Length: 416
Image 1 (cartoon, rainbow, N blue to C red):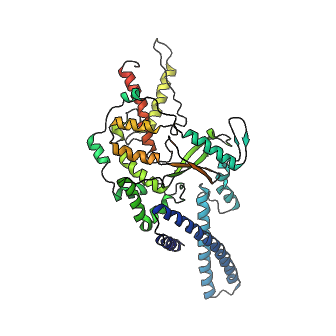
Image 2: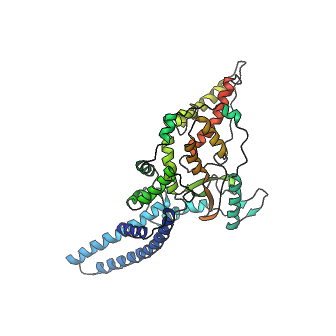
Image 3: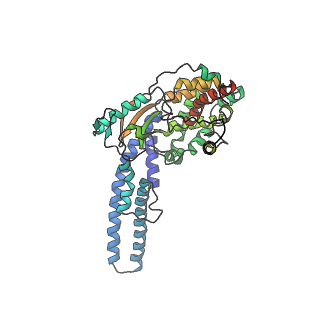
C-alpha cells in the first residue's frame, strides 16, 4: 500500500510542469481519484480474503492447507488493522488505546465531534432565525468581513513616545541575512505532522515524509518569497473554521475562529518566526511573559493571584489598591496593520524586515468553512490569524504599546 502510494505520488508529481501551487492542486485531484479506487479495492480484497479463509477452513488439514490458512489470516489481519488505524485517526480520541475495538459504538464516537461542530441554525442580532446552510454561509462571510475591516488608526504619537528603540544594526543584519535551506527544513520539521490542513488539503506530514519528491520545488518557492521578494498571495489562502465555545451555539460570538493556513505558507512564516523569536527578549518589556524564550506565561497568572489575594486580605489603613481588567475579546482580529508597522519601525526594525513580515500579513485571503463547505473568499484589512506561526510575536509587539503607556505614566508620576 505504502509503495503503491509513493509510486503513484511520484508519477503524478513528475508528470506536471506547472508552478508549485497549481502542481499541488493537480496532485490533490489525482490522489483523490487514486484513493477512491483503492478504497473500493480494499473492500473487495477483504471480502475475498474472508471467503478464501472460510473455504480453506472446510478443507482437510494437511500441511499445504495449514500454510495457506496462516498466510490468508496474516493478510486479512493486516487489512483489518489498516481499517482500524483509519478509524482511530478519524476519532481523535483514545478508545482503541483503552481497549475498545472496531465496533459500531466506536464508529459513532469517531464521528461525534463532527456532529457537535456542525452549525444547523443561527440567530441574528435582529432576532431572526436562519436554518439554510447557504444563508448561514453568507452571514458568516459578512460577519468576519466586517470584523476584519480596518476602522482606521488614531494618532499613535502618545503611545509611540514611550516605545524605545531597542533593535541594533547588528541584530537587523542577522535578521536580514539570506535565508538558507536548513532553516526551511527546520521550520517544516518543527510543525505538527497531523494538524488540520488548509485549503490545499495537505497536512505537514505529507511534506515531511515525501520531501525527497516534492522538496526541491517547495524549497525553491519558499526561498523565492523570503530572499527574492516574490508574492505569497497564492499560498496565503486561509480557511476560517469555527470551534464552539458553548454547547449548541447560535451566534458567531460563541465560536472561536481558527485559521487553517496552507503548509507552504506556514513553512515561510515559521522560518521568519524562528529568526524573530531570538530577538523578542530584546524589544519586549519584562512584564510580558508569553511566547518569549526563557519566560513563562504562568508567572503572570501566579502574580495576579498573589496580588488579588493581598487585596482581599487588606482590612485597615488609609492607602487603597485597585486592579484594572482589560477586555481582550477578539483582540487578534482587531489588530491594525498600520499600528504594527509604526511600533516595529519605532523599535528599530529595518524597513526590509518590516516589509517582509507585512507582505505575509497583508496578502491573506479568507473563506469561512461551514459544515465542511468552503464559502466565498474575501480580503481583510486588519487582524492577525490564530494559526499563523508569527502572530503571537506580532501581538506582543502590538501590546508593547500598552506597556509603553504604563512606563510613561510611571515616569511622569501619574501612577506609583
